Amino acid sequence: MNVPDAATISDFVVREARLLDEQRFDEWLDLFTADGRYWMPLEWGQTDPLLHNSLFWDDKILLKIRIERLKGHKTYSQKPRSRCHHVLQATVIDRNDPQANRFETWTPFHYVEARGDEQNLYAGWSRHTLVLEEGNLRIRQKRVDLVNPEAAFGNIQLFM
Image 1 (cartoon, rainbow, N blue to C red):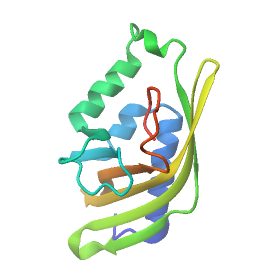
Image 2: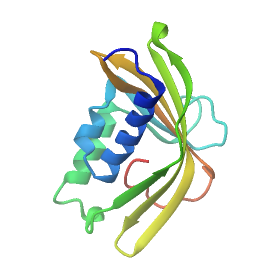
Image 3: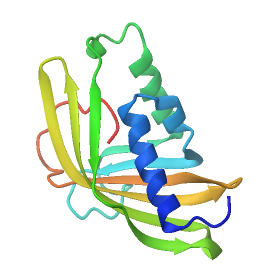
């Protein structure tokens, strides 16, 4: 891949959400770099995941464990299975720096997670830090900021 333009970067973000909606978790995990992180801060405006608690601060190994749990036949918390649906607004490219191999996005979203008769709606913004690896965009970090991160949430089963 040549240097990605704004449309390519935006398409990547949409494709990532579609993989989650279609529960193609292994393909989704492959979008991350080896040192990739999935971060969901617990506090509004949180700047450091190491000095403060987070809802999620998962490296690729922990993401893989979560995915294996979701696929497990004895995962009774997933009977019936959870499903999700992302509604994304237009992705904004905050940084397109091919020299530094760093591409950053900001995408407002609404996200629904449902299981059985229960349905939960979340709203927020996702920020992707992307890099090119072997000609393909990869996620170095995905940060999900919820509008109300300090709320008392039930179990968030899937990935936003």
